[in-house]
Amino acid sequence: EDQVTQSPEALRLQEGESSSLNCSYTVSGLRGLFWYRQDPGKGPEFLFTLYSAGEEKEKERLKATLTKKESFLHITAPKPEDSATYLCAVGGATGKLIFGQGTTLQVKP
Amino acid sequence: EAGVVQSPRYKIIEKKQPVAFWCNPISGHNTLYWYRQNLGQGPELLIRYENEEAVDDSQLPKDRFSAERLKGVDSTLKIQPAELGDSAVYLCASSLGDRGTSSYEQYFGPGTRLTVT
Image (cartoon, rainbow over the protein chains, first blue to last red):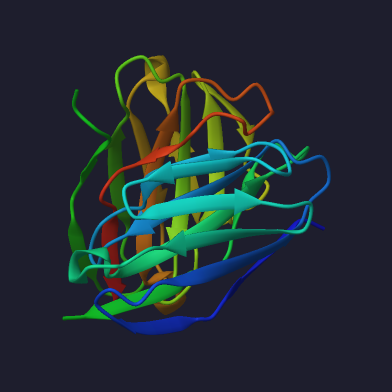
């Protein structure tokens, strides 16, 4: 059964304090691992897709990496506007996305 | 380019009443998804359409939920009758093409927050 677990559930950082969010997964036939950002009262906003182990993608202060068992979302020198819930999802042979429960990030000025 | 449009944004109904949600996907996206998101959880797929065909509705509670996608564009999700446990955010998403691979990025609408009292 495809499964995604994110940790930690919540993370509080000071502005400028770099950290990483973890996404552990098991999937039959990985077709893609997706990172989304979700602000309160809004739908998830697409950030990255990773397709194979060793792949990395960057966008501003965010960098996503992928291994065969997990993905990390690294946040470098975060700002208060980076505060949001970050969702990880895997797409496998079943043809559907399985989401984790998310990590809620709060960045204090 | 306009994103995924959903309406209404909020809905409060009493249990046993019917409710309907509407979604207009991104132009040119032939795959449409309906998800349910409970508080503090990630979205869970209810149904996936390829054009007007429902290709995965295994998670849709068919005794009270129904969906349609006429002409392969807009879609409607209906609940009748609603139960207290149906309170959640209902999200619509679309992608360029799925073909069973889940390899295409999905773009989400703002969701409809349903409260059943």
